[in-house]
Length: 393
Ligand SMILES: NC(=O)c1ccc[n+]([C@@H]2O[C@H](COP(=O)([O-])OP(=O)(O)OC[C@H]3O[C@@H](n4cnc5c(N)ncnc54)[C@H](O)[C@@H]3O)[C@@H](O)[C@H]2O)c1
Ligand SMILES: [Zn+2]
Ligand SMILES: [Zn+2]
Image (cartoon, rainbow, N blue to C red):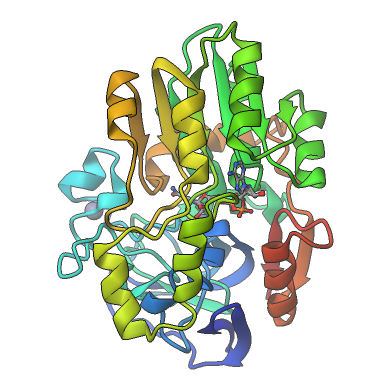
């Protein structure tokens, strides 16, 4: 089959790789019809490169049609339309039963000290082949795939794999009080969807900061107050002006480790390009390499006693954080990979009749799998208006 594979920094290619096969009697094979490119994929082709291996199949936002099922699978059958969550979670362990699917105890990577395995991710998370491919092997066929109705185009459902539950969790974790103010940092697919969910849930004052014109325009068109800067002082000033100097009740960081405006960490991240992977792997596990600009903005922009909800992914082991200031401000901090299944029952009803979150025209680009290298480059460099790209094998 054809698949998007990792070859090195900023280098993905489309290769022919062996078709996946059933390995356990609970596996299913899904023929992929749409597969998103995520901001997390951009981390894999830059900062997280030391944890990747040439030939790894990328992608964790897939949906498609079940083609084969193992002998013990009863919940889905060939021909069913399914979305595949990015967490590989068993659905039956203690963590899964608590709604903490990203910490699944069946797929936790204990040797590495990391949580549940993820499709198309680093060796810290199981190095499982991903879904930017023609076919995907999906374990836990009775509990993992999300069955979705026939009829509407893939755009309706594909974001259930990641964008929707990630953004939903970010807004829930932010816990903006009634009448309160929410600030979203970053207007990539995740930040954009956070603002939509915030409006849908009735959060009264929604602000968002970024510098990419088309991303700001999308958010502004749906009623978000946009701040056209990613500089900490500008953003903090704008939010203080809006809240009589108090600060935002809640801030979502939808940026993560590659934020603009962290010159020292940027040098450390560039070092990942010249230092041998084996050395850099050790450095990253013991040192801080994240660009913390967005997180520092969040800490300054949140009001005393407010909440910071981190959905942007960070990767350094000992990043310096202003703990004295966080403690003094009594900041509440919640974060983590999204627990996809935890939020599916809340989100699915919003994808059935009307389209309150605007998923139907959320994608800016739908391109054949073969065009993945160019699509990655455009998304990474924010060229050609690329905000959300769906690959369609
Ligand atoms: N927690 C999860 O489960 C989960 C799931 C999906 C994605 N993510 C993470 O969410 C983050 C966003 O993903 P995305 O797909 O929207 O990516 P993206 O890279 O398209 O979006 C990031 C946006 O942040 C903006 N930005 C950069 N520096 C900024 C700053 N200092 N202040 C404000 N904005 C700034 C960029 O211009 C860009 O538009 C990534 O870190 C990704 O890994 C987490
Ligand atoms: Zn993702
Ligand atoms: Zn589990």
